[in-house]
Amino acid sequence: MPEAPHDQSREEARAEARLTAARLSDEGVVALALTWIDNAGVARVKGLPLRRLPEAAVEGVGMSPVFDVFLVDDAITSSRHLGGPDGDLRLFPALDRAVALAAQPGWAFVPADRYRQDGLPHPACQRAFAARTVERAEERGITFRAAFETEWIVQRAEDGSYPTDGPAYGLHRITDCSDYLRDVLLALEAAGLTVLQVHPEYSPGQFEVSVAAGDPLGAADDAVLVRTTIRGVSAQHGLRASFAPAFEPGGVGNGGHLHLSAWRDGRNLLAAAEPSGDGAAFLAGVLRELPALLALGAPSPASYLRLVPSHWAGCFQCWGVENREAALRLVQGGDEQANVEVKCFDLAANPYLAVGGVIAAGLAGLEAGATLPEPVQGDPALLPPERRPARLPTTLDETLTAFRASTVLRDALGDVLFEAIASVRAAESAAYGTRQPEDVVAATKWRY
Ligand code: GLU
Ligand code: MG
Image (cartoon, rainbow, N blue to C red; front, side, top):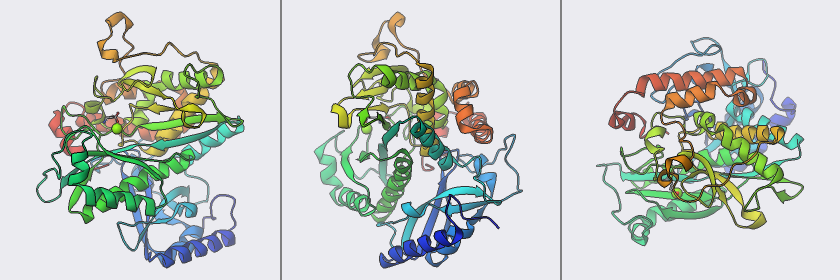
């Protein structure tokens, strides 16, 4: 029988779960969506009645490890360590993150931590990977604030038409969709998220929401919660939301930009326009690792339809101050606000892998005293070839090659998780790498 995870005793876990269940019950919750994100970036779930929460907090809920090698289309591959019908894991609810879902009355969202049956952490648990990486940084005196932006495209469920034909960033779109966007905002805030902005984006029917930054693990949980909430509100309005990297071949896609600031002794290491010292080394570490990091942040065959020049997707391996075509945009705004925005990432990413991977790469840069090249101004695609920075990988296959060569990411992820990710990327690349963009879009449009 597994032990309750973390350093809690079984009785402590049961007592905390009872309190959480009572709180949720007061909010009308009767069912829990115990959720984890697989390596393909798809949210998977076990639903359970609220009354089972104390039991789940002590014993966990069973689930096969085969989900670590599921693909976006639900096909199943295998890795050196994982795959096949054998074995079982236990999902433990992260009780402190359990929250009622305003757009799905009666349901609460709870992220899951995955453990082996003997009570040890599952080596391929992505949430544990993120937590572990943050801890490693804390041991070096560094903490982070992080947030994911969410872009999505919305259509009427009935006929696939757009609920607005207003212009990009146009007030017209908010007017057309005012009830829907108000309900999105209310549902996000009801879930405890602090909404910073909601705005129409560039593509037809496209919107974006940003929420306040928090600790990296919380930011990854929030990214899942934001999407679940938007999907729920959309359904209530007869709409369908797509978070896929590419929605129309050739169009501007949905990004999942990650904002991150690194702090030591109350000081934001990225606050200067020209980062120096540890801030520069951290950024240089991320920059150097970007081709491999795409395996975590732009993991879908569809990611490469989005990641093209002059689409604000950041497809060149460079950084720039407030440059929206650089893969790393240094966002200014004083000590409180300054951060790096990883623009090349999208929402097919498992957010725990994305944030943990970036932090691991930055820490490696710090340890190596990596040096930061000059910033790039303007659209790199328009620079003369001799001054143009390298293009990031243009296919999932190229990304996989970079990932396989990354000792930084292999060491940080551990062999079991690393190999599972590599196997999923290889299998999706084999299945979709040579297909027409229309087919890739059709296979991924509604999955993330
Ligand atoms: N939709 C763009 C992307 O694919 C980003 C637009 C923006 O800069 O917000 O990342
Ligand atoms: Mg945007």
